Image (cartoon, rainbow over all chains, first blue to last red; front, side):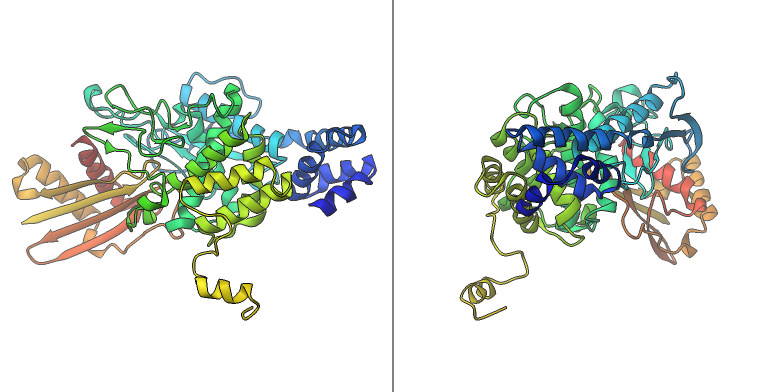
Amino acid sequence: MHKLRNILCIIPPHMLREIGEKGTANQRTLALATLSHSNEIRSLRFQKEMVERAAMMRAPTKQRNVYDAKNGSQLPGTLVRTEGDPISTDTAVNEAFDGAGATYDMFFEVYGRNSIDNNGMRLDSTVHYQKGFDNAFWDGKQMVYGDGDEDLPPAEQLFRRFTASLDVIGHELTHGVTQFEANLNYFSQPGALNESMSDVFGSLVKQRLRGDTAGQADWIIGEGLFTSNVNGVGIRSMKAPGTAYNDPVLGKDPQPAHMSNYVNTIEDNGGVHINSGIPNHAFYVASIEIGGNAWEKAGQIWYKTLADKLNSTSNFQDAANLTFEAAGELFGANSLEQNAVKKGWEEVGIAVGAPPQGEGCLTAVLRAVGLAK
Amino acid sequence: MTRIEFERSGGFMGRKVTLNLNLDELPPDQAQTLSLLIDESDFFNLPDSPAKPPVPDSFLYTITVTTDTRQHTVHTSDTTAPERLRPLLIDLSARARAR
């Protein structure tokens, strides 16, 4: 990173434009991040603008299609709205369209990423999937949304349509981003990290659109999904995992906020939607420690980690170590930002720098004293 | 005697819903409908059809049908369920959610 900063300082504007237009996501992210933290030098500010302007030249690749499954199971269904079409009379169609747009915009404008595959991939969404489908998912190619449990009598309904919550849309689209980057296995800790990345960027899309700082944000995932029959504010809370709902029918939010309450289970692909509370809360704490808008610095650190550092088998300890490393590269060793990341993981019971799971303590000690490779 | 055990787990919320039905204890018309759906799905010859790799946020379904002479279990998902199983899957999901 420091090497890169030095290189960028002597790169002429036309080459920066090349990086913005043809560089990899990583190169653009690094260029933007490096330059944005060298604002004290006027020439660098100018160079940052050049990179951003060049990135904007790629903008017209935002392509959104929304399909209607008409309560069936066939995907994608009938195309009902595409880029440039007027607003639909169907609220779910517009929510899916606008939500995909807000998510695309954040990834593009903040992280320099051009869609799910970073190559302008069209964003396909299907609404009205099946009847009484209280769910949303990413099927590997597109986003799919149900209408909740609209088929039940009003007094028994628990869920509204799943497009009603912007962070749910951001969550599903981020599953696509993860698939093209770290491709975290959807089981156990890698799976919970996969889930957490979706909650993190889903929440950031909402925070950015509302203009909420980390301190102002509600950090609720799926706010607005429950009907008034449910005693709860949403599906998950990143601020206080385990407190989003407590309801006679749904039970209590099962998310832990600390490793001491980690849930070992084979259900839900090894508890991917349960233990995600742990990395979720680490991100929340880091964001609060850094202050300001969470999508800017904390989001940048997590994005860099997702795009450049994690792999399919990464666990929580890896994520802690690698977000710490990313923060050091972006903001400097022992910076406020790097210390915030360390504190975030500490609060959930993970010490940054501890050896990854699978490597015994003895091995680490032996390596430290030069007796093991 | 025909019994159905149904479980739906996973999903965006990770919430599990379950259902245990003894067809002999159901109103005759409902028992008849379910028997028909089991027959039409050719249930006892259905292979497992889980999503591999798993689909993020997808529901995971496990259905076991037990009669006097046989028992069979199928694991499946929304994106991989055979078409002939879908009517039974949707019926059981609706019953499980309504409870």
